[in-house]
Amino acid sequence: MGIVLYSYSDPCRRPRMSTILIATDGSEYARSAASRAIELAEERGARLHVICVVDRRRFDEPALSSSELATIYAEDHAAVCVAEVTRMAAETGVTVEGDTRHGIPHEVILEYADEIDAGLIIVGEHGDHEEHFSGVGQKVEELADCDVMVVTANS
Image (cartoon, rainbow, N blue to C red; front, side):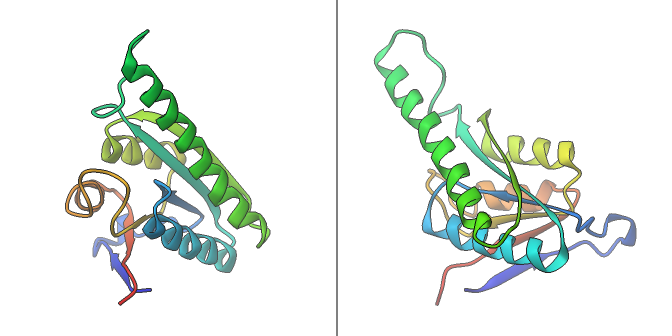
């Protein structure tokens, strides 16, 4: 798998490698990114957090409508994605804290990274959403206060 690491030249903004955040959507790209995040957490003794965001632009929380079932499915899918990364990490002994949230993915990822004081955010190059890397991943990379690693597709 290819990896692109976006880093900051300002030494005050160097990564706090004690906490790594993996953003997942359950795609094959996200699984590759999760594998890399788990490896790094194991190598560096870092805490690992995983988040999956239910995109409120696609899955709002409508009450008693036909869209409600789609939202429930999206919430269930998000929980499964977080559980999958947790299972992957359990095989290595890395402990993972996970969360699912509603919102605009890049905004929620960045907010969560700030909450946990992440030193590194890892995302897959593409994912299970309408906007691929040029959307969510690029926005995370542009706006993050920490390093961002984008795990690219296998060539």
